[in-house]
Length: 417
Ligand SMILES: Cc1ncc(COP(=O)(O)O)c(C/N=C2\CONC2=O)c1O
Image 1 (cartoon, rainbow, N blue to C red):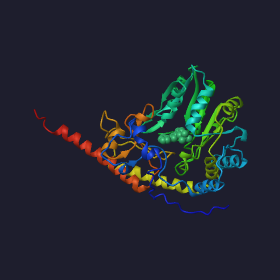
Image 2: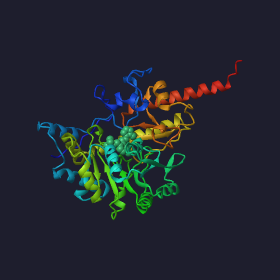
Image 3: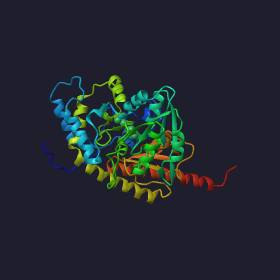
């Protein structure tokens, strides 16, 4: 069925209340480890939500149509991926976007990348072995080690005025620990938004493989690139090894994380057989249909989404230069996440997520939620209508400037004895 090009409305504000969304209903538990009774000076509907990484945009109609078509078959029985058209759709997408291919038998699926990380770490590591990550890091990389009761080894990235690079001396020193067995590598990187260069990817791969460390390359953000940027799957640079597992999914790209479906490309036969023996193989038939449709029909929506996000990032860059010039921010290569060092303005010794929730009515995440090496930073989800973005930034700026003024006045006022 040919799909006509259409323009998609990314400015539309969609009501998510009453949909069991983490974004609207899960923030007290996830950000503040609190119950639903936790109170704020704002009604829940008044919050500008810039925290969890799903989008405020409607999932593409092409994907929703595919889900409806599957619903119209009217039986939702136990399902797995049997139709070869699924692999064809995935393989075509990888060829078109990344000039990368892999044999069909390497492709497994999972009910999300987080569960895949938990399982792969368990299947790869012995109980006394360790998991290596770069920090700051997506928090669930640490959870994958914790869930398996394995020691986590963190290699802090270098941060030169907001430009993050890998400290290869530190990374290699930690990789030499003979108990380090797996590296969970984020490519593109959440939260910095870095796309790793071919040289950086080669150094990571060589260091790990030379030290008999498996690599789980989490590439969930790889479709969400700024215009002109390209992504290179790590495994593409190492065709002769079978120790790099690639995790990808359209869930981040097309706002369908709730469908819990991802691709896990496992070249190593022994590990794949363990996965096939131990992984719970049944999948949601609606998720299978949606994922296949994303890869078959998502191109135009993604093209327009990327342009909209480019403009959102340009707006943030301009806004910060104007209103918070001491903040350190660079438009990231990838993701829809803005990682901003606001330390020159931020109140000291307070929880920034709590500060912004209570003072500004903005829900966001801060460096403390990214394992380590994120001090003074906040992360904003920019996958929202521009009107929402503008309101969020305006509130953030206002409370930072106001409290900075209060601090200044407090210093200047005579001390009353
Ligand atoms: C690097 C990375 N891997 C895996 C996931 C989740 O994969 P899933 O289990 O949904 O397939 C996320 C989602 N990142 C999020 C989700 O909310 N905030 C974040 O930073 C991610 O950023």
